[in-house]
Length: 478
Ligand code: F0G
Image (cartoon, rainbow, N blue to C red):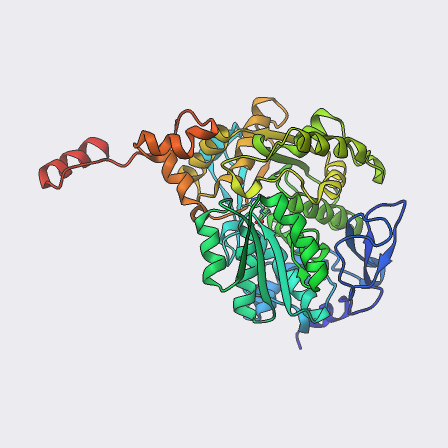
């Protein structure tokens, strides 16, 4: 056996107190074994973390140690962009790890997007998580959740979803055959690209008459009642997998910490995972500073922005004043306000990871902004024109980076990484509507959401089926 595997065998916790679950509230701090299936603390109801005894686990002494795995990429666990960092999420032994090839993603510099955002050349990067097997960042977390599900011997898994979690769950079920998928989606709330994945991969698809917040509440009840393994990001193991997005960003930057990470915020799993990743890397001594974190809400689903930037809700060393949040949620109910944005993936008003995200914002000197659907669609068009493209929710990160540059919060020289969370083809309806010449189509899909113009549209050229006309059109437009 090679040196690397021996090292990882030493440093992996298998059903020992080297890794355990712990309530995130310092006032509670209740702990639970790895083998327990929980989505909240049984003592106080708060979220749970996976905690490691790093002193005894002895993780690598430098991040560049992980480069040794590149030479062994014929081993699926070294090839996986999640499990090649196994030593930084060592809650299960190598034999239990589940991979379908997730995390082969790319940090792409983009001069065009840099110009749009206000960054100097070479200072803006797009972390393209659309390259994952199911087309979104969710696969990072799903490989970890499936690993835990295998450890505990679960046979069915459920999630509520705005589309990508369900696509990911369905893919992991169809490829691994470890579990059967049950997915809950809001009626008419999920793009066809994502719904088609869940259907094609054979998931039992339950359409709830309601939105994501309704589906999330129901799936928690149903999975508890039927003993189904829940893979939403309230599952602390899922977030372990999502930490690796940050490890790969550092890897692509030759282990240098950027100045800013900008990420869309929906259920707030990613932002929470990123904060944990950096806090742990600093604790272990693998980095000496953390980047700043910017979480970007869609204006039509802006709970975090409202609570953090307007009402002053803070982590407050583990004692956030949750009355502020409860009052806000009561207000939403009283006024029958529902989340509404073209960025359907983040059309969420009750983010389940709110408190963990507050902790991440405290750790990473964070800021929160909201961007409207016009800003999102313009940013998306710029990402398409200057990069690999993305779905609307992902473009919130780029729109948010632009806003923060315009405000002077992010400087032109600072190194900024925007996370593109989902593939361009996840939601072609929004893209085609933006570029269309058909005003009715534009109004129906985008105008109804307050998008007034498509400043960066790339219009198709209509030409009669005539050789001369076609040649003329090409000469005119190229
Ligand atoms: N971007 C995309 C493409 C997403 O699918 C999601 C979440 C987010 C951003 C928000 O990430 O929840 O970590 O803040 N989609 C979930 C789903 C809710 O069901 O697929 P977050």
